[in-house]
Image (cartoon, rainbow, N blue to C red; front, side, top):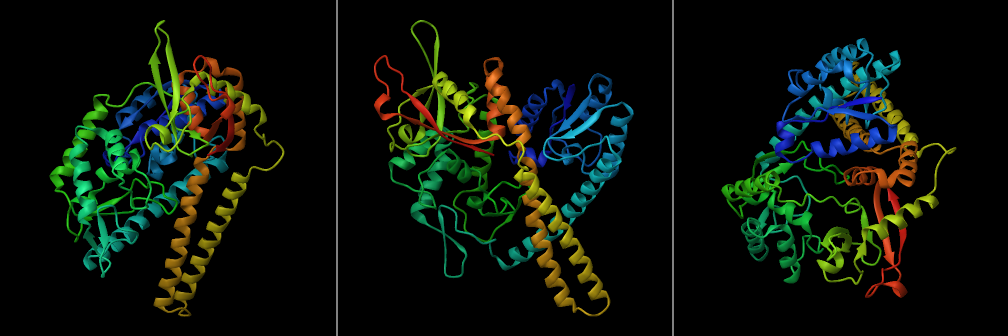
Length: 472
């Protein structure tokens, strides 16, 4: 089957560097690989909202509709957020005998039940977005009027005073200003090394890493703003954050913050990051210290390239003695270890069980909400009690909806097993880019250890073993 891939990111999502096109494409390409599909074309919609269908790449996809068999999206709302537009598009696909699939949602447009399910989910999502926007705005406005934050610990550079408000920690603030100044010339790697070398620790007492530095230089709190709805309770980005003026003292000016945004954008556009792809770099962990292992390469005298992975605990934090490991050594041991990974066949998929339970509970919440409304209308429930009960139900509903999204974004056992079989038999035929996409789609971590008695030396390669492999 030929697949048309449609990733989309709006201007707002794009400016926040979240919900990235690259992340969507990674998941979709890996899904095509697992299904044995050929990618006809990638219709990348950048900086476009889903409020209507007047989008260049969507129109291009519709023009090319005779040339492919299935339209694949990361999530239904990437196609459209409007129920009527979704119906128009699905009818167009059906007339042209083109299937529609979502990587993260179990939709089947070939049945009447499947089409009904899409309409129900799209309608609920539209309703929930409107409710969430209203509740977020009201809560934000109330907090802002009170001059208070949304809870949590104070960010690095601040502390909470006796009234629970942000106050500047001058010692840490000095390092915050230095980070913003140094970012233009040094970059995250050198900043991380300098902070750790000087014994500076993050707010949680941990060593600094690239992500922690990035969090500081992209946080509007430092120029006096407040940010809500940035992360879920599970710690994941929402990509729907709200930024407003705060009532706390600023450590830097907004102009300094905007300069950092421009520097980050320039580096992204001019290829500041290495273009070399290291498939294991996102999942590989050192069993000795627990830190990540990043890829590198070195040109040999004979003209060949030596590709390897090194432990950041050793080379960044100076707390580990893990030797540098050649990439092909890791590949060989990793593929060998796949033979011993448990393969679920007869047992029911726990993820599917979880999804069913969450949906059942969401249905029960809807029933309870209808009951509270009925009691309130009949006069058996006071307005105060009605509001308290509905707020509690909505809060629980939001938590379950987030959990449902996380579960549906995780590959099923069937998909995982299919991909593993392809890795074992076709690894050498897969490009570096696709190897990385496959690994990051189904694996969370691959932990390796180097045997002490075979740690490598002049002319000798270290002997390693895969200690643990965890799935997404």
